[in-house]
Image 1 (spheres, rainbow, N blue to C red):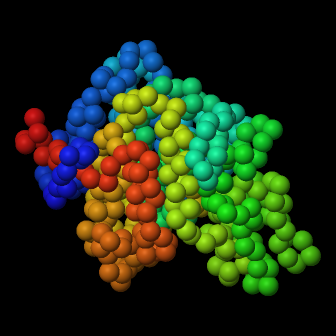
Image 2: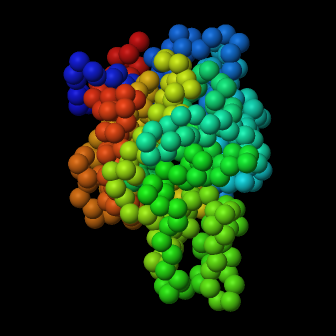
Image 3: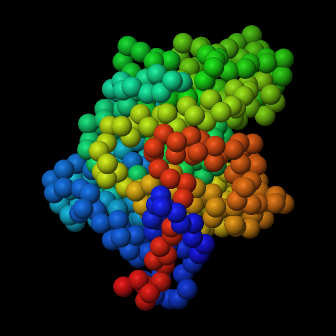
Length: 388
């Protein structure tokens, strides 16, 4: 495994996805346990305190999320030290539907052994305003994430329509910011503000619309309707999640153009969210499995662009994401996937090519903001015989 070492290097623990023999110790579950041991939960979390387990709970039609059996191992490890875990995300779909989806995907108290909640309430109205950077000004942090003192972030590495790559930082920057708050809108620090830097509406070119209805079906708020043989958008209701622009195949709904301001705004969102936690109280585990081209919030799961790679754990989300992109760039594109035939590299990963984004740019901004380091050292704990 290649190492990148400097005085500001972050240590990451890696376990590959390959099972080399018929032995439980070679299983992914056992490897996850070894990463948890290296992260030393007892040194970061106190007995009796609540610990949020942050993760994406999926979407109807999306089936390549983190396996519940692996999530439960993290929950059990937190309970073992006497802390009290709960699994949470902010409202992405309407809250009740999102909890139903989570249950169908295997995330519930019976399977995981802890509560599963919406951090900003069942209606997504419960957030706290915190100071952000020059683009966002303020950010709305879901109250359960704002109030909790400790967190384990479980990230499913995927592609992402807006940022090219959905990694640990996106999980924080987007997942720890609500869409709106009671009495306010997305413009007051909601998640959509990161998407709309420099504008208030995305581009609509109705002459290209084929009335296929996909935008209507994907909208989580019912903000798009068809009337008089044309689509109509209720801009007051719209969250600016941009799902409709992703599914439109005819150029009628277009995402805003990407600029450095766009990437910097995501880093600002991550910084605002992390400002509510003390140093050392947030740990990360990224699952480089089922590396599909789309985020888990889409209504389907594409063929993974590369084969399973493994697990990465550490305290530095920037280092984890940088290492993930390196590992994806070193992998062979999968036949039949959107990446088939692409020339993959660290400099231009298949995620970046599929979504036409520079995924490392936002990580570079985050590094400048003090959120972590792009330099890392890998400690490979895949083989139990070498890591006892």
